[in-house]
Length: 211
Image: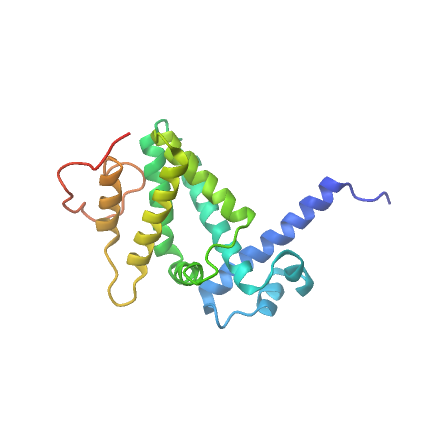
């Protein structure tokens, strides 16, 4: 039997990483952070424990990569869903809705993620986080940002703040209110993207800026 090519080996490694990241999200949703062990994750993924150590510095790095993968896959799916967006405002509206929507579909996972990145170590740079950043950067560029990098950083900060407000135990803000504020900031119509079922709340009369 001839040895596998480098491309085949890389594809196999990527599938193994994907199984690890998917298993991590599933177990966080089911059990939370403290009750999920690396052994649990590798068992669920059908992977060897050494694979985690090979790719990740520890549980926190694995969890951040897993959640960033979840986020960039959700965002990519929103941007690619039919009918495909044909203008920058729809692109940005979908991007905002995709990120905010995760607080409903994966509440526990997103709460764990926000707690993790607010620790002193902050963001762990990884390919999954970089892909997420690129999708958001492309979204503000499509919207018409004069400086996509600066606008991406601002959008990231606004989305993080909104996510924390949505997940705040005991005193969460309504998604419709926070969505309206973000849409107002970017001059987006409520009907764009994937509107939540609530009646749109009253918003300030004038948008802060438009492209």
